[in-house]
Length: 435
Image 1 (cartoon, rainbow, N blue to C red):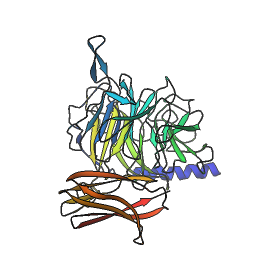
Image 2: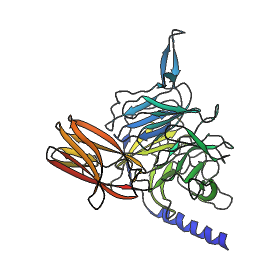
Image 3: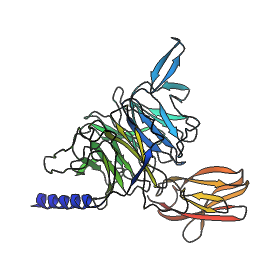
Image 4: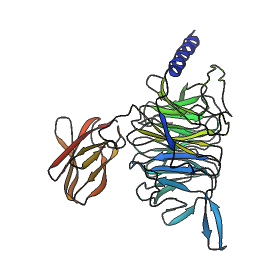
């Protein structure tokens, strides 16, 4: 009887999910119609400045090898400004960490922005962290030698979760500096391309695309072991999953023509191919969707492999794996999006104060602002009673864009006010600390 009730509830969720209409509209191919590469896209991420990071699975560039006086094919990570122009350090073909330089010869496997907006790059069996402002390597780790990685996941505290594509291997957890904490799961189930985790890192969404569902591992607190507690999104052969910037909706891809329709042993559900659905974990409902616009109608080779959102949530960038003859990245806009200004910033007298990222956060977040003129800049944080809790900036700064990290490890959960005061102009915004 209990199983029948659960089945009826799931059918209702599916019916509600299919009842809505897609609100997102395609802006165009990103950054242009000619951006295509070997075997299609295999990862996309967006940093706090709005730069879009893209990767292909196969070789797309080359490097000169002095020892052989010849050029050798390699992979690359491409970085574009929001307007589609290349970032100054793009493309990235080599990554240097602690004086050792690696060339991206091996397969690219996924991208993810971490809690500070820096980019986690999965390259075969190695995970790199790249500074999103400079393109320089910051750290690297090899979780399981010889085992191809999925895209990584990160909680709001900066803990990083990694796993191999092949089943039966561990899902490992690392600190923000890539020190190993332990294995959350000893042996994964099903082949996977990616995973995601909850804000506090106590829930793992394991998207084994051969499982035809998403497994949910959870623990009551950081001192307890993870256990397989639930299965959700039945019928999803999920190869791509990411949080929307506010980390309230989890966007998961349904599958492709090679994997759908798929039947779960207990539940038979059918979803549109090459579509990302926005799932609310609190209500277990589907509330929105973004569908890949096929270059070849119904092509089984166009397989969803990455989704990321602009910091203000206005734009979504998606990519599909499987072909080198069509544009690999598409840009969508949410017509229901609203903000203070076009860039999602509070603007007064030419001074701009951005929404902190991430938000909610735990315990660190980044605050960015833009100055039209030089001046004495004071940036403070207050609680809701108006009490000063932190001074982040108190110095002369030049005109241009600036950003600063705020660590609230010593503060309680709640809403806080941050205020920018420069040349007689005061701008405030709110942020939420969620522990």
